[in-house]
Length: 395
Image (cartoon, rainbow, N blue to C red; front, side, top):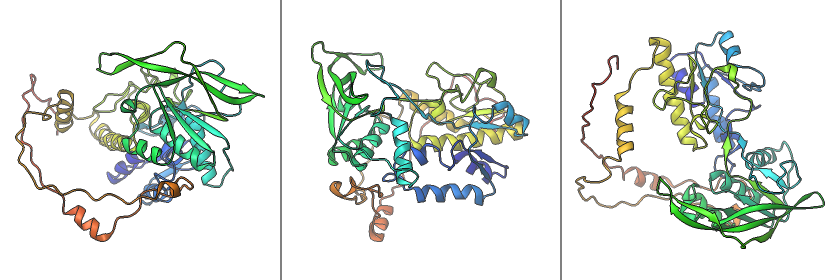
């Protein structure tokens, strides 16, 4: 959607081929309403059609069409924004994705979406165990609580400090009463009368740091315990939907089953095909996906008008700064007067955990002016000397 928006502003004819019957991808089905109200998302997607773009629904790559089909239709460039809509299994004894009470994280969030939208009715009872430590796991845990279950346990194999989920999400989940089990890992799923009855957990302990400085974990023998539950939600990872891309599409995949694309230009191994967002980087945030859409629009504009993607000094400079952590230290800092930010008021935990209404409320007009006045004009002056000259044709 982001790529389409910026291409439309540049005057191109754009079609968005949507696999579902509504626009927005994972933003529509994967992010609960209490974080992203769907009326806001619909207003954003309506901008595409207002600018002259088309959204064609129920058009799934690998199911209804291939990349060859797209070029045969006359499209001159293709941007793959497939997301990561297939969950990863736990790989433990007794795991059966088809057993009642077992839910993959993404599949569960789709059920939640359909329930809130009034398409289906889903109710949870008893105790729920969510396995994972990312934002999808947080969304599953907080949504399960809103779906009517009694308690929600979140199991994560590392420490709280190692959790990849946003810190705000972790705090919000704790406030809503979700029970965390750190340094714990499932080893077996137990069934009774053909449905989930519990999860066997083992304690984990930290070991030596790996090459990136992150401490590994290992199971502690003899520490197995049983956690009874009626539902297990596996939210440990996501990947590109199987079958979306095949060998005949001519698009290379990496060892993580993500689309191989150049970090700077988003160019793939096939001429005229670009890729960005989760399908190229692995599961990330919505804002990173939107940034990839903007970058792809710039690259496609170059490709269609010049036949190649231009070198971007600004992007290269940003890459150098990030890689070498420049400006992180050895800088001259001048003291400034602290003006603390205005925080959005939120619904009380006991209220918000019972419904899917947006959690963050609107700040007052006075607070909005106060927040705007906090803006300080900051300057950083730096230069980078490169071994080779900047490539020709940068403009």
